[in-house]
Length: 123
Image 1 (tube, rainbow, N blue to C red):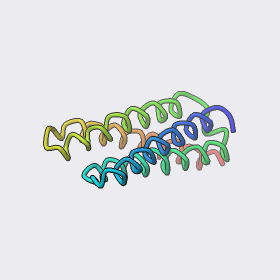
Image 2: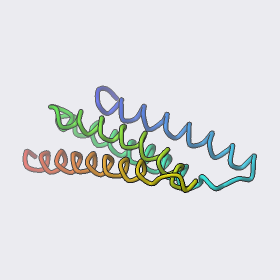
Image 3: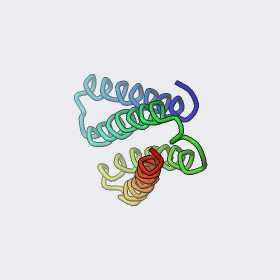
């Protein structure tokens, strides 16, 4: 696995390792109040990123150009803003970061949709 696929997979594995450590901490302390943020880190950070990695690995031409790199940047930025934002929202401090991160993540997913549709036209 090389290129963009590698970077998506690397980010996904790092996210799930952080999520697993966070889950172990929650289990050890019996404090599961941050479970929604932990779940988003694992689901968006690992599952989605792994799916992106497999797609770009299986369809290497789809990784060409600026749009796939924008997809990676928006996905990573969205995740790193959304997960702490959810934690802050759970503490009833602010929902702004969670909303902003979710919006950035959605823009990343729209980039991926465009990449997939673009690939379908050229196939």
